[in-house]
Image 1 (spheres, chains in turn orange, blue):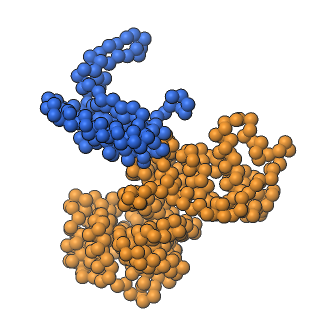
Image 2 (image 1 turned 120 degrees about the horizontal axis):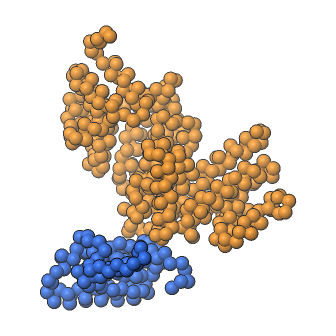
Image 3 (image 1 turned 90 degrees about the vertical axis):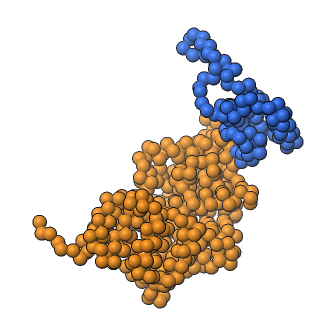
Length: 418
Length: 119
């Protein structure tokens, strides 16, 4: 592989990440045929990989890809088989001049991506496939990659994605920004799906790469640009930024998971923290408090440790009270119990933890891990051992299991020598 | 796009209803049809006799099969339909939501699969 090819490939993968959603959204907006749009975009990428090393990087790469993909789409719709290649090649197989529009044509239509997201998160689409669908159509992730994150076989995920795209096309799900009156139900689904895409894909502790931060920032930017007047969209953007700022600090040199409290704040990315703070303060001026803003506010207090050296657990516990009132999921309840314990001691934390219904508490890994830590702190070592063993049995990934085992081994108990 | 709104309800809820109720329902549905027509989206509608009057027929397998009753005994049965012509699913759902039958039953919304120009 030549140096040029490698540079072109690297540049193309950057462009794919930034442009995929826009290209698919624009191409599919009229026909609602996402699968066809994706095929045409993929063909344009293939042609770019083949031609750019020869013709050089176009001035407007995204415009080049858009033009090629659009021609493919038009050819498909005409379904004139003899025409499929004439728009791109002359008889010698040389790429003909491609009339590429000026930059603004593609850059001034960010709302097409938003329309695509609203289509993917439509209430007529099965709730569990919305996040994967956004990951594929907007972020350009492969079905195999998504399947891994959602712990299902690739074939199953691929089939479900195809089915959802068929539904969008054949049921006539609109590519539009719904009427403002529908926003409460629709926007929540969009944010929920993006958050799902983010937490499944980009926050996976086993999968951190340098690119992840870029993708996170890309999503956050997208939200802030597309929905500048929506407090919760900005809140989610802030949350993603804060969370992404800790990517480097989450794993130690041996690849072991490092919990937030034990992370070295010097490793946090100050650029991401600043972006998060900026999004959050803009959200606050809109005066419409919501779940994502509260979660972002909690992360913002954590981030402040980089500056002050201490964590203000009192502020965090107070924010969790608000979050539990608004959004009482098991995950939030566990995090609140932990914050309460940090602020008011293990006994108070255990009391908060037992507000979770007993049957959920027994089967929810984070709840068992928290229970173990709080029992250990309260001096109930036997109870802590039981809870850690349970938490380990409920963990799905190796890193979490290893981390919990290390905590279990660190408990002060008489070790029986085998 | 053409959409069919299929109205499903529990027939038992409608057995032995007083004539005044039927009269009232006819008026409510009449007003709904009027609204569809005014919006220029109305294509067709019908209200069906209960499934106890249904006859099911098939030529599947090469021979004629005629059977008294519906093809499937379910609690919710198809009792009527509307065909409307609207731009997209959101518009179809908007009208389905306003259909009087939504108050007591379920409405299944399906887009037409007929290629353009075939109707």
